[in-house]
Length: 304
Image 1 (spheres, rainbow, N blue to C red):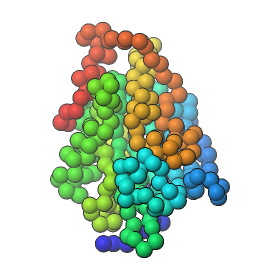
Image 2: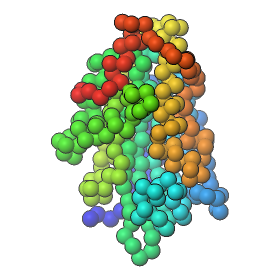
Image 3: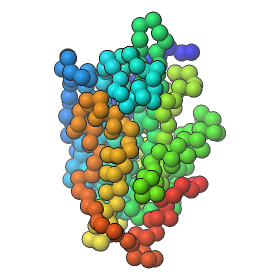
Image 4: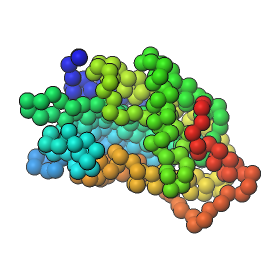
């Protein structure tokens, strides 16, 4: 097996954050990312640091964040060791880039992307390591051509790594981004994978590079196509209502959010994924035959 190169992963992630931020700023044309660089002091629960970048009140994006973090710890949180008992008693490092973009226009989908690397080490024993990540799309007013494009890019990213990768990671995404209490997916899916170490280190690393670099190729053409679509206050209110589903998933089911909060991570960075405005409505039912009712057809897994 190839050697594990933690520094190469970190260098790539920092470059990826820079590249994505530059592309999103160019697409927005108004707002710029503000950077908040943070460091953990020695003796705190988690060591390390990161660069949190947030864009607000843009022409295209109401709010979005593109975060890099690299945290270290001497002990895994109980939530992790319950599922992976082999991690108990190991020091660990986790690094990644995570982003969520919430657009102004209800016709532009919200998008999420994350690529990450985890390694747990113990003197005298082989390290436990894996990669994880993916991207998913959450429209309020979906268009078939947008969904096809999103999934076609995802398939192209996966193809060099084997014809089985896209269907596996597409299915994993459909199952992971699912709200059981609503009996619906969070959106139209994409890719999701975790515990990726079945290939050698170099191949796994190449795959997360392909996913990270492919995100803007999947997302930005959709943004350009929809960002100037006219919309009404009615559609804006539906967008705010649907954002509530995003909040529900992230706070109740998202493993990254739970790991960050339970391990003593930086709260502001962890909750960067929350939309700036959101609303809930008791017993909401869309009008039969409306564009809002049509969304339900897309919130179940389908073959794109």
